[in-house]
Picture 1 (cartoon, rainbow, N blue to C red):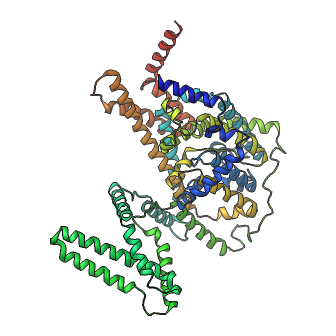
Picture 2 (picture 1 turned 120 degrees about the horizontal axis):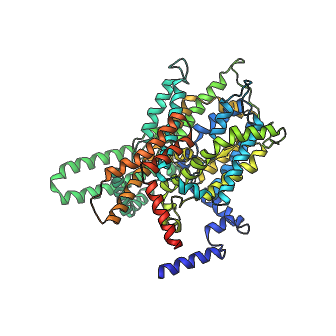
Amino acid sequence: PNTNEQLMELAASFDNNDTSSPSHSKYSPINLLSFCKRRTIEHYNNISLSELSGSLGDLGTFIPLTVALARERKIALAPALFWAGVSNIITGYTWDVPMCVQPMKSISAVALTDTNGSGNVGLDAQSVTTAGILTGGAVLLLGVTNLIEIVNWIVPLTVVCGLQIGVGIRLASKGMTDIQKLPWGGGYDCIGMAVACALLSMFWLRDSGSQKDKKKQEQAKTDSEGNTRNDVMATTGANSATSSDEDVFQENDNVEMGKVLNNSHQLETATSLNPRSSVSTTAHTNERFDFAASSAPSSTPRQQKQLSYYLRKVWSRACCCLNPFPKTPHPVGIYLFLIGCIFAAVTLATAGPDSGYDLPLYFFGAPVAINAMKDVTSMSWWNGFLQGALPQLPLTTLNSVISVCCLAHTLYPDKRDPALEEKHRTDAVITRREVSISVGLMNLILVPLGSMPNCHGAGGLAGQHRFGARTGTSVVILGVGKVLLAIFLGGSALTLLDALPIAVLSIMIAIAGLELVSTGVKVLFECVQKEKEKTMKQQGNEFVDGKAILQKNATVAMVTAAVIIALKKTHYGALSGWVVHMIYGDGFRNFVVWIKKKRAARS
């Protein structure tokens, strides 16, 4: 009873517009300024190499589609970049997870591949605009009326797992297919470069933080905290013996001397406890003192000391990517993006007049907001609805709303809302209604101003998470970069993005896809474990056939994934998985139980 009273008081505080609640401070106009100020401070404190690396995690999907649509004159690149950046910034301020903003893939695919009977492309620029507006309006309606929860109730979690696995495999296969089209050699943008980037990515992404390493790091941290006092005393004594003009370059040496003295004290203590190791301990101590003496200040000129100091710093920074056991995860996105930028710069610097690049580069000159509704006709609305909105709506509903909320719920358990988690919801981090409204407003407001049709995607979120993003700061960084690129280099943005090597972008796509696959498999096993525990509780039997439960759930997920991969239609896969769930799985039985409960409630 006490718990229920506390929950009722908490609900009443939300109903009474308690401005101290984070959810109300987000959307209340009165507290908008203070909310933005607080979020800006949080973003400033969260800036790190990991967040910067994670911000580049979805570029492998964003850049190819954007460049292709701009090259075919289906979108204006400068407004598309600018409004995508604005959407990233708003998204990063609204949610504290790396929620990506990506082009709607179905609309983009139809605009780039499908043709009508006359041989012209089926979706022109005006039809792309209307398709985005119609899709956004439909998704917004689902969110405002909360009908998205009915869709989520109909689609079981095993089908969502199959969606993540199928879409992830499609992303990874797309990257590999793009690599297959490249030559083996003859230039830097080749299969050999893609293989090299893949090997380096495996080295950077490998789990260097195993349990053994984590225990060592925790033990080292504890030892360092316990020895801080001795280190400070030794460092202070060493610093007092140096001259003031050499303090900057001798400080590190004095710290090393202090640590050696402290370590020698520890070694003497260990020797007293273990006399057998006295000989080896004494020899090791002498070696450390010899090293300290060799690194101690000498009579060499100050210029040589400065040069050696800076060379050591440069060498340590340059070789940080080769560290097999880094203290923090490698910023893989930054590494790959820098590799691509270096080769893109070489390409543009050596490009001739017949290279096809629009050179020289020039600043400004491109508007960041246009009237995209200028030449829209009734036929544009019809084509946009029939060829764009209808195929895109199931994909947006399932992958950009339901699947992405489930993925955020899985990746960030520490950010779940306790009230929603108690209800066993799979959107306790970001609700499906919030994402639906976000996608709807983003397209209804920004597409008429020149933005491409955008949505949130599970693949982009998985890619950014895999590359190191953990907060909304990474999305804000990416948004600021897009806005600056659109403003200052809007006229040459197509040239810059088109010069990035396909090999690097394809590897980034493959990594994002595989991360989505692994997350789908993880959620699938969690579903099996929860169903096993539920069955044990209902039957009161500890011996439950977990393999049978795994086979039943895996069949639903694998059928969903297989149809998505074979037919390349996400909604076909979802429909097939739902049918298998109803017939082969527990769908029909759960439906019968639900009907009986409804009849009992009425009676």
